[in-house]
Length: 319
Image (tube, one colour):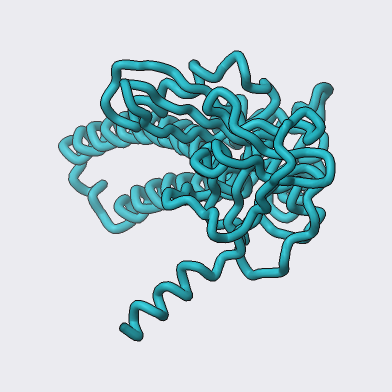
């Protein structure tokens, strides 16, 4: 029994607030659950002969497309209704975050969200008062905000914690989404760079393999003609040759590591060329990123030459 009481207290610790424009300052809390009013989401019912929610969610962007603003990133939520009907919700997390910022509520404090259609059983009986002028009512099974002077009812309910619906949905902060996007973009950039590096290594390795094979064939022929060549002095000369090759390879690896530091979502690698004495790369760099790229080159053995249109040609000498 004691364990049940503790769990109940934990689960109800989030402050539940009704989100609407003109709302009063909410009570201070460490975390919040938000019930969105129609000012913060879009809703549409559609009869679709599908069985599972994940199938409906895939269709949500196209079903709500004509209602969505093109400059916003939306999250979609679906609910199954009777008679093969589905309810589609779309909300923009950034809109919610920006609105709550004036109350000093941070995105990571928002835990769960609800939609006012989820309290339709209440709204169908009595309007919900928002402020002196507006109320939340149910029209055609949709929650709607209208002026109070348009209503015949003189009785209004006030929002309270007892109106919390059973079903909740997790809030997805834009910071999490942007970090994911950033990770995805960085992953693509790094993968592309690694592919170019790998290709350069393969070409170089093939070249060295061919050169080494020819050298070995010449040495075998020389040994057959004059066995005295296979002395320590000759072996040292061969060792010196391979050490030079290894030194060059090591230099290539170091310079490629330096080039990888320059790549970002604002600094795009356009070309990478491996020459005999150096590696050359061309980067398309946004103005805000040029200073950072130049600073990195100054702290490495790279050099740069700036061209018009944000193009930087970076060069790394090989030893």
